[in-house]
Image (tube, rainbow, N blue to C red; front, side, top):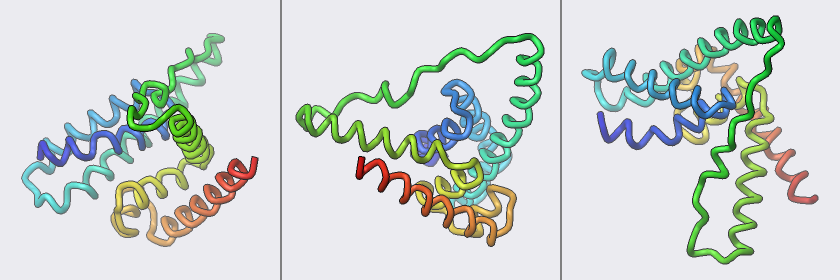
Length: 173
């Protein structure tokens, strides 16, 4: 179980961070999902853990959105905005093997991908991340997101198309 959690931690953080836009909230969601997996499903077969973990994480993300909706109403009533969070991509150390030009190219590419994924609607974003990054199949993604397999296919297809268009636009600029 420890090896599985160590392997999935970074990718799960990225999924939660894309969904919430907040580093601290993303870390909390991933931690809650990990604890939930260990407590409820630690005795299950290791092959089931990825789908179960992502189901728990998606549930936590949906719960976060519900709570955030209430919080944003309260902030609006009291006239308070959210503080700016620092970008986790800025915390990634530079690759010492590449020269300055290569590092700049890599940073620009990473920034373009990050921006493109963040611009996707939430369902498309999550379907893309679960399918492309996590390697879940359509049925596992549908179970994790709580939607039908057909909806997963639609969201994933639209996400890939939107990413392709956006990244091609940025490449030509």
